[in-house]
Length: 119
Image (cartoon, rainbow, N blue to C red; front, side, top):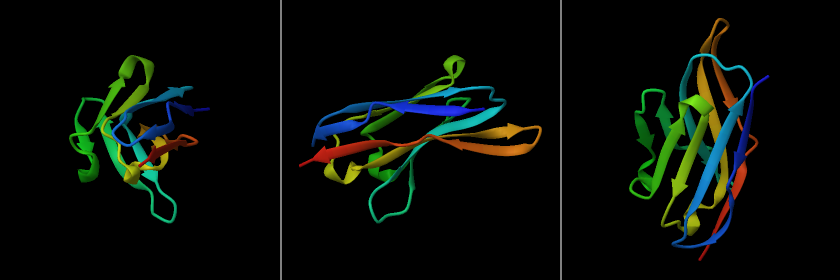
């Protein structure tokens, strides 16, 4: 059974920084990408950033230049360094891992970690 364990959320003032981590445990084959999504109250879940096994990254326009995603393939762990945080970054952040196995494509989600940015 695959589990994604997130850590690093919390309360920070605007302009501050946080680093999120997500470690995938269990047997996972053929990971394609690991990433972070977020969902603010009353809004749809949106992609923040993702990174492929080969290291290709993609960011939401709203976080470009402020957030950096990285991963440790050997540890099946993905990180999100968030700098210059803004109140509008307040949301629950979810880790996502997707890929494929003998049964087809898969996607796993973490339980979410709250990030609150005060003005």
